[in-house]
Image 1: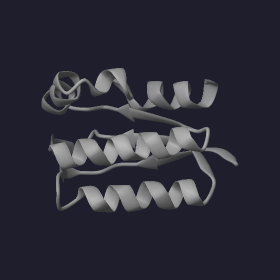
Image 2: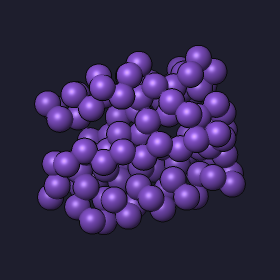
Image 3: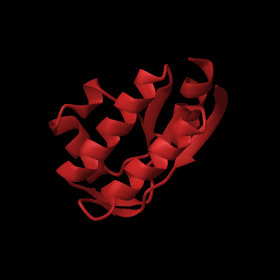
Image 4: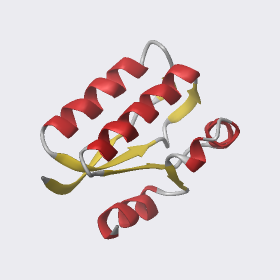
Amino acid sequence: MSDELQVLAPHGRLDSESAPELTRQAKELIGKGGRRLLLDLKDLYYVSSAGLRAVLEAARDMTAVGGKLAVSSPNAEVAEVFDISGFVSIVEVYRSAETAAAHLRDG
């Protein structure tokens, strides 16, 4: 098991076209033993329900192997989608990557 922090940073849109790639990347990291995953959303300007499902699947997969996942740096629109959809009660969302990384390392 690796406690090394892994970072995935989707950019642009996280939707039905791009979400499968995020899912693939997360599964690959978990399969290689990654147990600390940070989704840095600083370059993401849109997330659809398919994108939310990809984040949820990554969080579920990480929890299943005893790991942790955190989301950081969403813009106002993406943060609102996470809030309205209730994802803030499922996935830990942080304002900055530094804060999220510290949480993943310490927790």
